[in-house]
Length: 282
Image (cartoon, rainbow, N blue to C red; front, top):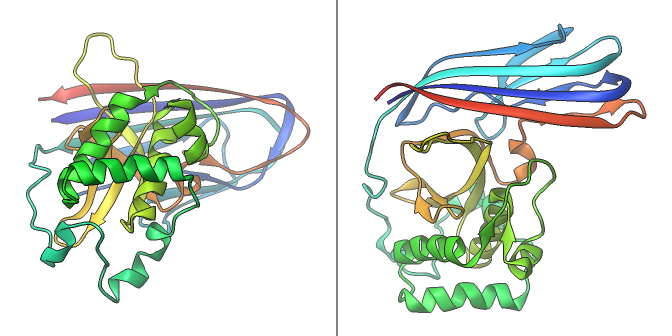
């Protein structure tokens, strides 16, 4: 399938502000099954400078800096990409001992994964929730990961929340509802507590429905030797495949935000976004 993705973001300020340098993360990642054919980024403000870079976790970043005072900035990202269907279970976990939880990554891989494996502290109730599912799946790695993802989808209400950082894992677990990023952050902390490396992914999810209403989506990826990074989407209870299009992935959600930076001034801001995903060829 070929997709055209147009993602527009606008910040409107109550009074003119000075924009400090900003990181813009809108360019989708090339993967073994996603080929980025073209990408353009248009800003309503002519930046004093803009530098396209790869960040420390191999995400595309446009680092931009500005001059003057501004009351609004509009960002339009347009990407055309080709997505190839694939079997997300086409792998062999190796060493074979990693097919059962708990397991330990071998050195030196363990050192490379430290940022993805160190959890924040979570309450006993959330740990017990994970252990219950672990026992029900005989501690088998892939059955546990898929069942946990399905259970979060079943047990939690997904809500739309355009702004704000993810809730703490325990808050999401207690509330039994949250946005996609809340569920992802909760699942990450649970998996890390069990010794499983995981990362936060931000991007786009295409669904073939009538009159879709798209917004930026989040899911989780788990690292398993022999398989690499495998995606799980707790909001939808599924393993990710060719209609999940990653823009940024990181050990921490803060490094996946589409726009990050500060402004100089006392103004309040209003955020508005639109996202269109069009199928060009199927």
